[in-house]
Length: 183
Image (cartoon, rainbow, N blue to C red; front, side, top):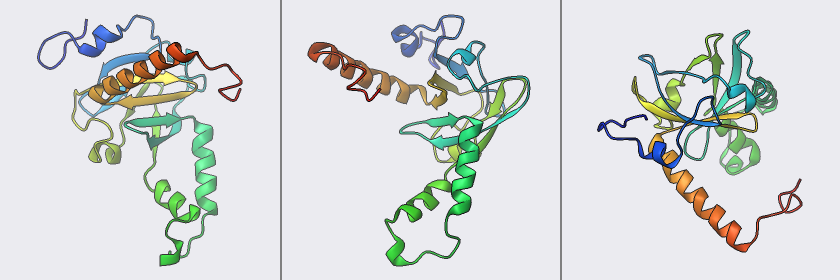
């Protein structure tokens, strides 16, 4: 079992033990250059990932972590940004969708996942505290529906606990049907 910095069993491990092969969630340690190696089995959750060649993907701040989207999302993002007006903004632009999109576009990064399954967490995301900023830090990795999320372990624990509460409410009041979920 993984140990936390105090040498005790990680509380996330106790809540959700990580089994091999990768099951969509895991706690991992960054290397000395703040790089993360993606686990074997990730391809079951992120079908665009292919280690035969390096892949550039789009990294954006999530609610409390970093979210990696597929190369197609990076291409779409670049096309959208290229269509934004290039003129200087004026006060009456505040709050407009173009203004908000232009601001958001500046807080994204291209992340290259190498053939060795390794990628470096973006410097800007580390400086902003979105992901750990130090070598050998622990991170939570969650993969589902074609995205990869990188979390501070404590924030992932909070999210898991909040989600568990929502699931308990859903179970008590009836689970939603596919129609309720818009599928």
